[in-house]
Image (cartoon, rainbow, N blue to C red; front, side):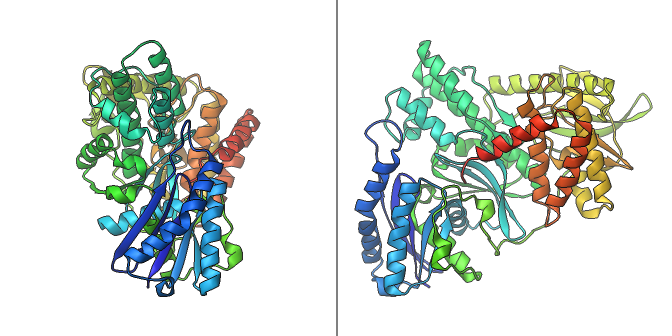
Length: 532
């Protein structure tokens, strides 16, 4: 089956032709703004002027004509509305005139499927990093779901904004990469991680201030990369230990950065994972990736009528069916996580666990030491205050600053992530979890990484562990982030996830007086979700 894919979500208009065995040719034209970021109307005009040229070139270089094409796919979204409309009109016109089946494709789905095709990855955790997108994506039960993402701007957007401030034209990421090679001093920038989510706008603002203070551009660029890429590595590693996946796939324009690839390779080796790096020519937006996704969709029974192909600027990948994705087997390691290793022992006659924080070889040494110390001390303070207020945290028994270790009461039970598959009476335990989170928030404590691997079911009780990313003086948004994390994990749990979350939420509301403010922030967070 010969498939023509047409891409045009942002700065690049591209056409690619593939079949089941071969990627024939990809033709692309990229819009380069004279100043500032992408101007949607200017980009759309660029695409209008070039879309037929790239289609004709792809056909010519593939030794085909339009009559040889069996299927057309186009980027339906997410992206810039004016740009999306140009490729949609081109694709529909070709489809109608030549009676060729047409499919509207989710843009990130194309990045993932071309990455899998060109690398041989089969069941990966995906790090998708580009101008508008920063996401950690996993596949199960016939769809992809987002387990971590930026809470504000995409990492590529952040890099491009700072590049403009120092006089670098779009795209700025590659030049920042070159400047960073000559940087030697790690400057203090915000390190914003919540579970598997990240935020980059604070890094941009702080970097801009450092420039105004006269810091060397090379040092600022080095610090931007080391800080933001460490955040990506950390959240990606957390996703590995949370989902049990053993493959990592890198894709998107920022995935071309060699320092990012080096850091993730170090992390993957230590986590005993295979890493698959999408070839550089397919990291950037391209028509062949749209063709590959369309091919997978068509082979798995997906068909679109013309009315199904309206463009959608906020078309998320978790809204796109992917019936070729199977559930896979998830194996979660209880005694090793993204940040620590656990050993079991007896301490003064009490069953205990010794938790040792481990340094990260992918991180700058100065940054690594700072994070290890901050998180250990934060965890001890949160546990102490929580226990005082009756929160079901493990009791802190001992600690060692020198060895970065804490000794905690051992909670006998099952991680809730595993309990979802083996447990009974889930409504009861979801209600208990809602009560416990409400108690924690009433004590003015946020957790910061409230995933189901940090919750233990112990007989009829719920215990919450590892609050090292939390806060003792949180704002309402941090409470909302805790609730968002529970929701994200439960929605990935087969078809019953929403019902379980509703039970959890009703219980939480009944015990936490500030729940209305939390729900308002949750709605705001949902509304400002990055398109994906």
